[in-house]
Length: 596
Image 1 (cartoon, one colour):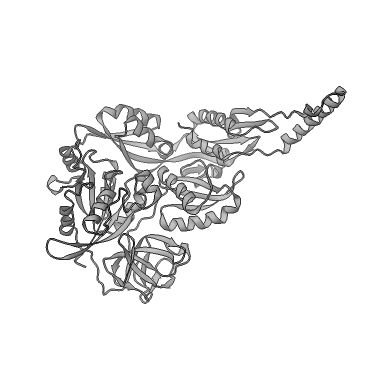
Image 2 (spheres, helix red, strand yellow):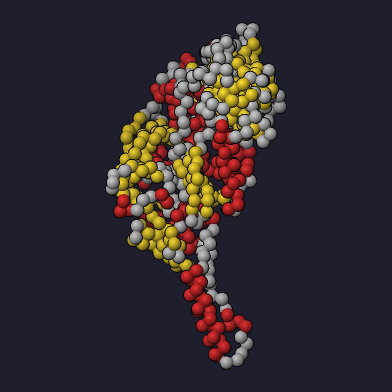
């Protein structure tokens, strides 16, 4: 065990984590063919968007300068705030972390957030300035920022180029010297943490594990601590970076096992695997559960695909344990699920993966946050969907979730960033000046304002230089109302939304105007209304298509034409009473784009 080192790479998005991981794998001969695409970012979406979505574990054999052989277990983590749960899971399986800072960008918001996660997890941090091969680097500023913002002295900081490999051998030696070996005894009963998992059609669930005590090999009987279910191990192994079958996994090692676990719901990330011979072995503490920030409804376009969606979500949750879901039904869309995500990018990526990996055609409703409603009784209700809101006369007041955001922005863009924050109902809490070039703005925002295009607009007003990270602070009362959308007098619950009273009518008018263009014309008049309670605040009508019933009349008495027109008039009345209005998928997506 003294020759094992478990570490991860943490940084802000696009600071070169995957590139550095590739250079480490290349220098240690784990990979031999150098590709333009990052080796650990194997998912199509990761390569298309240039971001890491899934944390990847890989075992690296390393012969150190002191003449000893070591095993390095590296976990490459995502950098975007929406995937911070992936980072927290990775930290639990490690003893150390490489903190990467881009030499041309400096310390950014997610750098700070991920550093605090690592400190809270008790990890040894190796600070590294990356991309020193660029011409526009600001080394002195990076040293100053690391010292003033994170308390890291400059003599501890290493300098590397992940692209060229400069300084990477020295970094590998620093990992051996600075990061402590794992603790735990191989002679104690088995105790290992599930920090990730995947599903294989032939072998069932594959838990990715970090062993804290004991050992596991083929033929052992294991127990899942949370459910008490017992399985027999078929195979153990590790990632290099593809799965490699091994003989045995001992204390301190990272790898995977298979035990023909067929039910996706049996395995939970954060659960402890123990030996069936020692059922009283305690669970590994300190693993936090995800806290969804954004909820939306997911419905199959083809109603018969509901069972397929159910199976897909079960398997997807193994690979991404930060989503939560429950059954939901809608009058307009049928049966589906209410799904919780960590943010808007997380929601976007999840929808895309469900469509690609499980071949599903899905409709997503307007994303919303969890509101706390105090009723007149009084009772506290936590509601994640506008359709679940009680009637207005039963509501005493509504409280909305508030987040504390740290926005790091260059001095010249402070004004536009503050104007944007004011338009999003932000409250300035404080300002910090870590160096002469940048300002840290600390704001409290309603979470609902952040999920509707704030991140994109921040990048726009700051020319891409601003960065943001946030934490949930709690709830505070707000003057909020529910806006119902009525199509031909019938509420379409999937189009309802919650908004501040002062902007609710304006948004209602904009949505109705957009819907009028999206919903196709019918042979009867279709009224579109936005209503707050029983008060209609906006209305537009879709004019009917007139079918030319006289086209077949080439002559004859006027009474023939009048008879056909009367018949058409009666038909129109009947249509208006019983006719159904089809709402296309674009109408539901239009709510997302109202902010543009």
